[in-house]
Length: 132
Image (cartoon, rainbow, N blue to C red; front, top):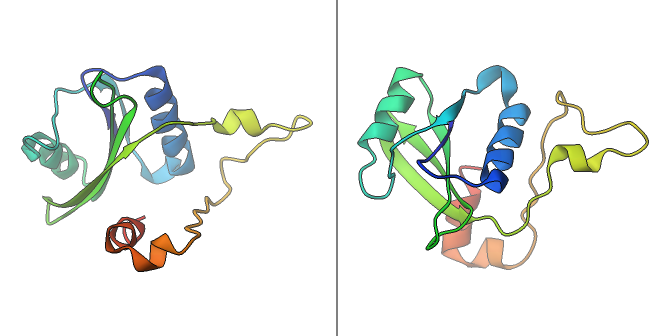
């Protein structure tokens, strides 16, 4: 389930769109703005996940205090299990990787590489790696 908050930037919208394209057959992308504040009250987000039978969610917002913000989380039994908040500083859309008329295929499998000592030795980073 991918949704955007009351305010979202073009960068966050493009990021959510690319995440949707990667998971397209089994993903839902809400293009309307939702009045959800996941850190204050997660119940509207839990309701959306229950209604659409989704256990994973991505929620994008943009504000002066937290610019280009992405919240990724998961639910269990339609109750919030955990959430992680990421600040997006630099984002390149899949369309930017077109070379010679051939770009990234929608059917290709995404890969995430967690490289470095911090991912093994820092407990907070190890927690972030597990649901992704």
